Picture 1 (cartoon, one colour):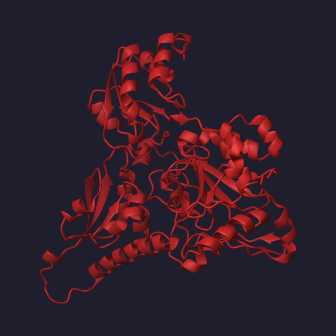
Picture 2: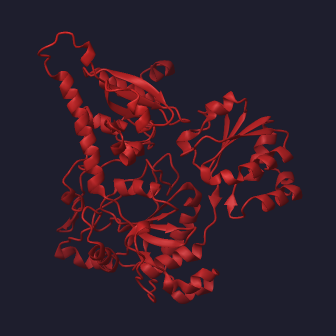
Length: 512
């Protein structure tokens, strides 16, 4: 970026006047791209939470470049909704997508695309003090004073609990190991995680903190609250004067192609559970539960906590894993029954055309949600089955829309987002499966359904100094956009794996 842009007083004054100071909309970078590539029409796409500043950004771009702007007002749920096709149809030659990571690579979009993460500055002193005030730095103390105490208070059936069961010969090492915390966030806050990690991995006394900390909120660290019922529960005062100065063990996991620490509502890492090195707790930095629920679903036995940087609240969040797994298993079983009905011998009427049933394979058309690669895999799985299927293109799903197709389609598989099936599947009159669940129903993938009492017992145990790893049995994967996903029912499966020798096959044939 040239100094003429960085030091433009009029531009800097406009940024300071019209945009919030703690939001980084990367205006200088935007102006540089528009000028450098000679863009004449710029499309702006952003989630609803950022739409408030869309007109200000539009005005700044038009004032300091020769380009016109178009604000794309359709709903944008995530990076999967990047709508380069619509932007191109509108005549735009540059699309700027705000608030999400680069899930669809810029070399695969139909027009030039610029991703702006919109990093948001948070108070590092406050979150550091909140953790040190509430969380003991030793694993054994953390389990006793935080996990077991909160579980005794809630005593909620079906909620995620972490049981401690360790042999006597590993007791001493168990007592001394530091509390192992995992830090995750949405893309706006991931840069803050690395500074927080460096700080928590060092010893820091209360006196040292006040020498370093400049935040006024840090002065009342004794009043940090920890709720054991999450955002829907009553706040309870956990501690008023404790301070844990010892270092923690901090991990910032990564699921490629996402950035380190970043999670999506459909994509989260599977964390280590073994007793000597396993994770004690997950700390999510962000507002709302949608992204956090993703990592909770993939790690049902690890307690999760949410730090809201806007309200500066720190709560423990719960998730009813038993209910979710039961509901999704019910949908899969209903889908299996429709397959069995087609396989059953026809006894009476020879003319069965009126009785013909089928599956609807829904390709999402909201931005880049739908994957033709996933659709092709679904059709290949269905090809080995007598159940007919038909592709359906839909931008957004609703029970009313599905009902219009009548009784002939008995099961639907949607490729838009697995959370549609997990969160809203029960609202639909017919089974609404994700591609992974469809693979389970068709016998192409291993299922997750295990008795609820086994969920809390998946932690591996130390026996005679050895570590016994838990198996993948019973896991519900949240790897929809992961390069290393479990199967080809996800859009990026195998992209992170180096390809072997193609033995002279052309690129065209490989693509086919």
